Length: 101
Image (cartoon, rainbow, N blue to C red; front, side, top):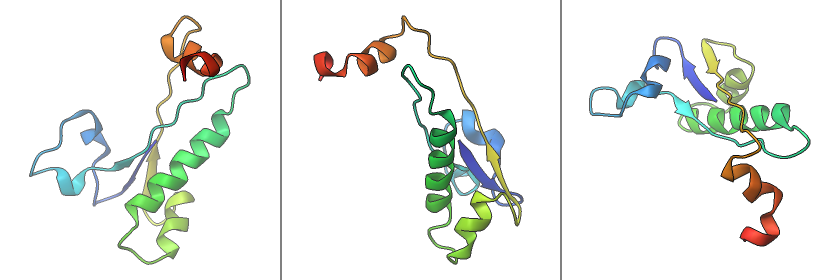
C-alpha cells in the first residue's frame, strides 16, 4: 500500500530506485503479509494504509492523517496484492511457526 498526494508525490516512482532528484516526490509505502488459512486481507490493507498515512503526514497537521486515510484533499492510495501459493516458503513458516522460530 502506497499513499501519495496529488502534485507532491509521484506513484510511478515506486518501482524505481531513490536518488537525490526523486526523494522528495517518492510516496510512502507499507507492506503487510496476509498468510494463513483464514484471510485477513481487509484488516491488513486498512492497517497498512493507516500506517502509511501516519508516516506520510508526520510534519503536517493532525487532520491530514484522517484526510489521507479517507482519500480526500488530494490523497491517493496505490494498492498491490499478490497470491502466495501453498508451496511458498513464507506460507510454511507462517503455518508452522513453532518449528521455524
